[in-house]
Image (tube, rainbow, N blue to C red; front, side, top):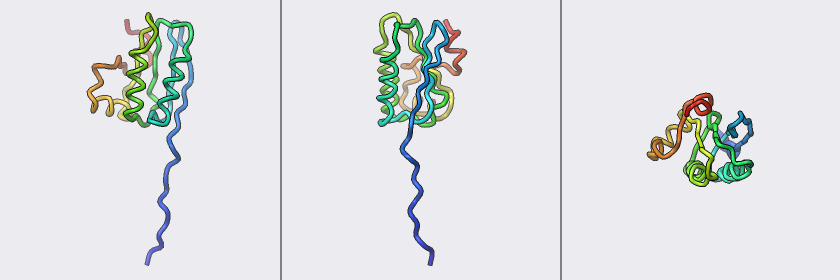
Length: 122
Protein backbone atom coordinates (compact mmCIF):
# COMPACT_ATOMS: atom_id res chain seq x y z
CA UNK A 1 0.00 0.00 0.00
CA UNK A 2 1.40 3.40 -0.95
CA UNK A 3 1.55 6.25 1.49
CA UNK A 4 -0.61 9.30 0.76
CA UNK A 5 1.13 12.64 0.78
CA UNK A 6 -0.08 16.18 0.58
CA UNK A 7 0.10 17.56 -2.95
CA UNK A 8 2.74 20.16 -3.56
CA UNK A 9 1.18 23.53 -4.17
CA UNK A 10 2.79 26.60 -5.60
CA UNK A 11 2.89 29.73 -3.55
CA UNK A 12 0.42 32.34 -4.74
CA UNK A 13 1.66 34.21 -7.79
CA UNK A 14 3.70 37.30 -7.33
CA UNK A 15 4.22 40.25 -9.61
CA UNK A 16 7.14 42.63 -9.70
CA UNK A 17 6.97 45.90 -11.56
CA UNK A 18 10.14 47.81 -12.29
CA UNK A 19 10.24 51.24 -13.81
CA UNK A 20 12.94 51.35 -16.47
CA UNK A 21 12.35 54.58 -18.38
CA UNK A 22 13.79 55.09 -21.84
CA UNK A 23 13.21 58.81 -22.44
CA UNK A 24 10.91 60.08 -23.67
CA UNK A 25 9.03 56.87 -22.78
CA UNK A 26 8.06 55.66 -19.34
CA UNK A 27 8.56 51.88 -19.27
CA UNK A 28 7.06 49.48 -16.73
CA UNK A 29 8.64 46.01 -16.82
CA UNK A 30 6.40 43.30 -15.36
CA UNK A 31 7.56 39.89 -14.14
CA UNK A 32 5.46 37.11 -12.64
CA UNK A 33 1.71 36.57 -12.59
CA UNK A 34 -0.81 39.20 -13.63
CA UNK A 35 -4.03 37.95 -12.08
CA UNK A 36 -6.81 38.93 -9.67
CA UNK A 37 -4.40 39.28 -6.77
CA UNK A 38 -1.78 41.30 -8.61
CA UNK A 39 -3.75 43.38 -11.14
CA UNK A 40 -4.21 46.20 -8.59
CA UNK A 41 -0.40 46.54 -8.51
CA UNK A 42 -0.40 47.28 -12.24
CA UNK A 43 -3.25 49.77 -11.87
CA UNK A 44 -1.37 51.54 -9.06
CA UNK A 45 1.93 51.53 -10.99
CA UNK A 46 0.27 53.07 -14.05
CA UNK A 47 -1.44 55.71 -11.89
CA UNK A 48 1.91 56.53 -10.25
CA UNK A 49 3.57 57.37 -13.57
CA UNK A 50 4.00 61.10 -13.25
CA UNK A 51 4.71 63.84 -15.72
CA UNK A 52 2.26 62.53 -18.31
CA UNK A 53 4.86 61.02 -20.65
CA UNK A 54 4.12 60.95 -24.36
CA UNK A 55 4.58 57.18 -24.33
CA UNK A 56 3.94 54.55 -21.65
CA UNK A 57 5.19 51.05 -22.45
CA UNK A 58 4.01 48.04 -20.43
CA UNK A 59 6.57 45.29 -21.02
CA UNK A 60 4.93 41.90 -20.36
CA UNK A 61 7.86 39.82 -21.64
CA UNK A 62 8.49 38.52 -18.12
CA UNK A 63 4.83 37.73 -17.34
CA UNK A 64 4.36 34.00 -16.77
CA UNK A 65 0.57 33.97 -16.30
CA UNK A 66 -2.07 36.41 -17.53
CA UNK A 67 -5.61 36.07 -16.17
CA UNK A 68 -8.78 37.95 -17.05
CA UNK A 69 -8.24 40.46 -14.24
CA UNK A 70 -4.85 41.24 -15.77
CA UNK A 71 -6.45 41.74 -19.18
CA UNK A 72 -8.95 44.10 -17.59
CA UNK A 73 -6.11 46.08 -15.99
CA UNK A 74 -4.36 46.34 -19.38
CA UNK A 75 -7.54 47.60 -21.06
CA UNK A 76 -8.04 50.12 -18.26
CA UNK A 77 -4.46 51.34 -18.60
CA UNK A 78 -5.06 52.00 -22.30
CA UNK A 79 -8.45 53.64 -21.85
CA UNK A 80 -7.59 55.73 -18.80
CA UNK A 81 -4.17 57.02 -19.86
CA UNK A 82 -3.84 60.77 -19.50
CA UNK A 83 -4.60 62.82 -22.59
CA UNK A 84 -1.51 62.90 -24.76
CA UNK A 85 -0.06 59.63 -23.39
CA UNK A 86 0.03 56.70 -25.79
CA UNK A 87 0.12 53.25 -24.19
CA UNK A 88 1.93 50.36 -25.89
CA UNK A 89 2.08 46.76 -24.66
CA UNK A 90 4.94 44.35 -25.29
CA UNK A 91 3.55 40.82 -25.47
CA UNK A 92 4.93 38.05 -27.61
CA UNK A 93 5.18 34.85 -25.59
CA UNK A 94 2.56 32.17 -25.13
CA UNK A 95 1.73 33.11 -21.50
CA UNK A 96 0.59 36.55 -22.62
CA UNK A 97 -0.49 36.16 -26.23
CA UNK A 98 -2.65 33.09 -25.73
CA UNK A 99 -5.11 34.75 -23.30
CA UNK A 100 -5.14 37.91 -25.42
CA UNK A 101 -5.96 35.93 -28.56
CA UNK A 102 -8.51 33.66 -26.85
CA UNK A 103 -10.44 36.70 -25.65
CA UNK A 104 -10.20 38.46 -29.02
CA UNK A 105 -8.35 41.45 -27.55
CA UNK A 106 -5.46 41.49 -30.02
CA UNK A 107 -7.22 44.23 -31.98
CA UNK A 108 -8.22 46.21 -28.87
CA UNK A 109 -4.74 46.38 -27.33
CA UNK A 110 -1.74 48.18 -28.88
CA UNK A 111 0.58 45.14 -29.05
CA UNK A 112 4.26 44.96 -29.97
CA UNK A 113 6.57 41.94 -30.03
CA UNK A 114 9.63 43.59 -28.46
CA UNK A 115 10.45 46.56 -26.29
CA UNK A 116 12.60 48.02 -29.07
CA UNK A 117 9.68 47.77 -31.51
CA UNK A 118 7.36 49.47 -29.04
CA UNK A 119 9.85 52.28 -28.47
CA UNK A 120 10.72 52.89 -32.10
CA UNK A 121 7.33 52.46 -33.77
CA UNK A 122 5.67 55.67 -34.91
